[in-house]
Image (cartoon, rainbow, N blue to C red; front, side, top):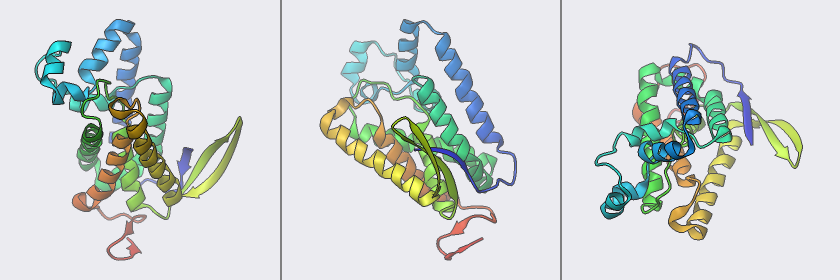
Amino acid sequence: MIPLRDNIPRERAPLVTWTIIALNTLLFFYELSLPERMLEVFLHLYGVVPARFTNPTFAAHAGYPDGGFESLFTYMFLHGGWLHFLLNMWVFWVFADNVEDVLGHAGFVVFYVVCGLAALFTHMLFHASSTIPVIGASGAVAGVMGAYFRLFPHARVVTLIPIFIFPFITELPATVFLGIWFFIQLFSGLFDSVGQGQSAPVAFFAHVGGFVAGYLLMRLFGTRRCRYCWRPDEGRYE
């Protein structure tokens, strides 16, 4: 399922959303400019290799420099290919502007980074000895989706559903679209943990962790007044 647009209007320009997309785009094109060997080294240094932090012996033998904690932040601005990059940025674009509206620009920056960290640590909890670099904005984007699920359950999402080679476009409630997406990630993560062990190639649990973090963090961050937001504690819209 690919979201095409939602029906919640934004109230102000999503400056942080635009900036995050721009940073991801610049870094993705930088990656494309690197020779294959340099790109591999770059992703191992600025993506997160869980075993680098959980297994000092492995890190020393593999030649990783000391530290590397900046990768906990840089990993969420790197991508592994065109499809990875375009899907993450498109889904982010569909949902992020409304969440930024609610949190404000500064609040959204903090929220996005915290969701990215929560997503990463969730992945590392299940794949602590993995030597595959974790890269991509999808964990942080999942946090945005979790926040959207909490804030705008009444929203409608125009969705593209590929059926074999035929595109089927329909409008789904946000709770249905996001709920299906979440359970696909959860069950895929559980399946990969059984089938792939510590070397699962897709960080499904990062998506799960980011989504849950985004949903829960909305209570901590609070919301400014928003005409379209659902107030779960009060059972009403603002």
